[in-house]
Picture 1 (cartoon, rainbow, N blue to C red):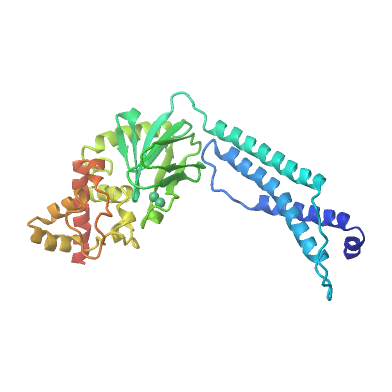
Picture 2: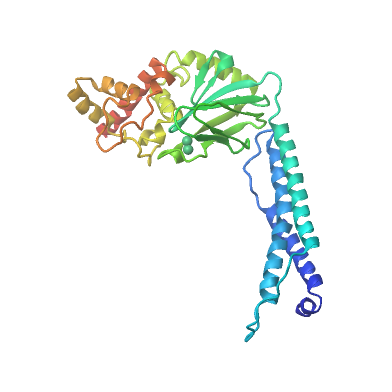
Length: 358
Ligand code: CUA
């Protein structure tokens, strides 16, 4: 090989580069880049990615081979103090290195545009879901289903969904990796994205734009269920917002409270062992809430229940020393029904009381 490189450098380089290209493409395609495919867009996007890799490896190899060869072959010999030869352009070479990348990039851009147009196509009768982002939680409502509100995203399998995404504060990004969809949430405008989930299961909505101290905790559950189960979820959800979610939890107040705590995004900021939230420290920990609420409530002339309720509805009313004011969103009062807030208050006081007794 060394002798070949010295005698016929172009041929030797071509052989070496081809081998490197084949190995590079094999490695790139062998890597499992993506999570489960759970929407009709997944396959097209994954194929697009593979095509981009296949197109990129030869370019990378070509550039690196020429660079490495030049460093090696044209390095200065010991004692050589001459200037380099003056070179004034090479029209043929320049035409080639402009035309080929232009054609490649244009072809890939067209292909990408066709795929995007295809996966975002409008279809008849989509399920509209409004998505609202705020530091640091997502909430969802279904305007076509009597403005049903939910903190968990539930979707029927095989139905086109149109997400209309808004934010109450800063820029976030709405992303479900398994669906391959993603869109930024931009203050003042509504962004849209469409997808058809085609695989039953539980996934996560993830925020992928650094949006503040609780960014990494800004994730919530997505469930893709059979259409019939979706119908019954809607019916149950409508009934249960009137009773604070207790019916949905089989009449168990504590279970309903824990579900609210987890689904509303409280766990992103508050530590509460009972709900499995062990590291969140953006807001005050709630494991000793019963004791604290009794103590601080007394100061404010409120019962422990009133104190906790006010803290949820008007987060700025009392701020625990050591925690920044204005971090907790003031929107839970609108987002939750009065009964749901009741359930949450009872749950929080109940679990922290239980802990005190131990
Ligand atoms: Cu919201 Cu990051």
